[in-house]
Amino acid sequence: MTERSGDAPAQHYGGAFLDRASDRRFDPAWLASAMAHDEARYLPLWRSRNRFHPGGHGATALPGRTGGDLQAIADEVVFLGVAEGRPLFAIDLSSRESEELQGWLPAGEWQDLRRFGPLLDRREAAWCAYARGMLHWHRAHRYCGHCGAPTESWRGGHVRVCTREACRRQIHPRTDPAVIMLVERPATAHSPAQCLLASHQRLPEAVYTTLAGFVEPGEQLEDTVAREVAEETGVRVERVRYFASQPWPFPAQLMVGFRAVAASVGIRVDPEEIRDARWFTASEIRAAGEWGDDASLQLPRADSIARQLIADWLQRSDAQR
Ligand SMILES: [Zn+2]
Figure 1: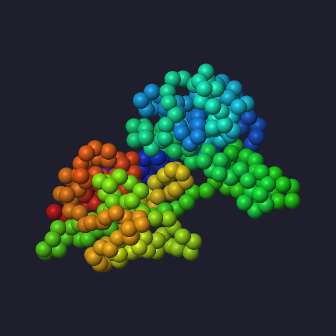
Figure 2: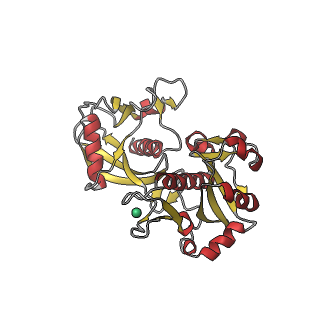
Figure 3: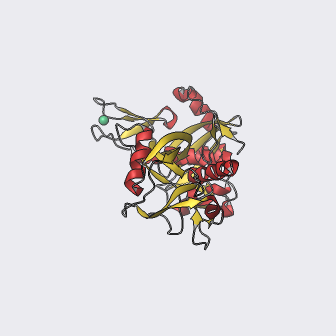
């Protein structure tokens, strides 16, 4: 892998493909002129679906004039930043029936980003993920969690504020950290190196992927890695090392990737979450198919950090041969 983000391998849906221009969010006059600018672009979203050109060949970005006109019927408009010298916004049209929007939008389709995301270049994937994540946060925080009054968007859509005078609590966009980890078992004199992958209850049966889980309050990320691996498979781990992270706005996660070394090898799965977990050799993984084909063993999606963790392990096992 050649692309890197800092010291870590770059991930699909991540990367700084725009200037978030956070100082401009504080300037209402600048924001108003940016919204009306002919060169502005708007990424439309409808009920958590991004808009794509037919067949998923690129994301639809509406020109400034159309975006400006649509604001009157939009649920929310969020300033994403300045991309390639042009202001970029996300616009949520969820309250409208899709027929109402036909005349405004070029040919294409509303689709879950998970469907077409892998077809996008990294720049468009990052913009679409950011837009989806921000608009999901807005929809989920329309009321103040403290007093129950409605909230309103502020600072280009990067803060919501409680409308009750006596409260005025501010809410900031949230990302939920989750860890995702590849557990490896080094080669011995009698057996090749192996890694631990599992078939998860929430995924198709043939897909074997890394373990993952949400961080709980009071946990250091490394603690979560050890706890989740033990809970889901009964395996104990040591030497937990950071790999890379990936925004995963489905709906609001940040996946923090780790590698860990097994300190025990016996597997006892938690059937609530895991159908089956096994130790795989590099050659078994190389023979696996892709998500959605008819192979009896399939790898996780190409756009996921899970896949990058597996690719990294394969590369390192090759290097050690
Ligand atoms: Zn309030």
